[in-house]
Length: 290
Image (cartoon, rainbow, N blue to C red):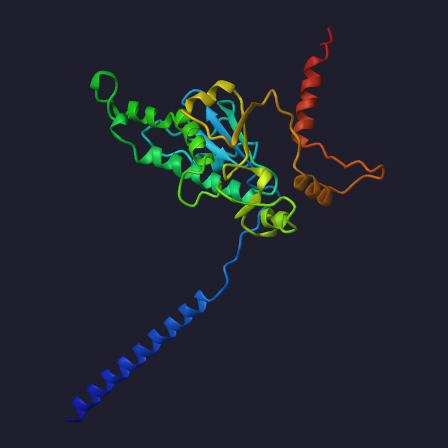
């Protein structure tokens, strides 16, 4: 009889200890949920320019926030569509700038939303393809290698996605904003993404039919014809017609980091790689001694 009582007491104590541990875990979990979300910090002007690079042989495309293509970021955007179809490394002599999307200054939050939508559309086309990627001309079934080559060629689809996303397509697209008066005192504060506030409203002068004004610079002006239609808020230009001007936020950041010289001019430091290349070029141009 005593043995039965001891076993029953042991089971009850075990249940109590298990319930206590589960209660403590739930309390700890609820405490973790109460913590405030840490907002990411971005550099001034981050998201206001989106660069699109294209592989001029295979037609692969990647997106970047910087004018210089980063190999590790580019490889993550290229899926595996077959053997010998995904490059093991990025050869920059094969990649060319296809276009650059320029948003007005202060709308970096909108630019980051556009960047995310473009990446999602690209992944959807590469991974969720239809029967067009299975059959060729005359209904011939494509081989695995031919299908992979067709999936890698995303240049035309990328340009069509740009027209759709810049036109406000897609759930959660921040290209559609509410218009406020330009003379309102809080107009600049609402669109200042650097202050950590999302751009839910915009100045009326920056909108066309409720969409944010955007400029797309093309390496080849004829590439825009891959899209059937462009929205009214998008204007087009070529890189040859444009002039590179740094954003005011980038200039302020550079002044704070590098400082200024005594004559008031901003000090500049030449990269060591450029110095080495110039020295090699000068040495090759010098006449050889007999």
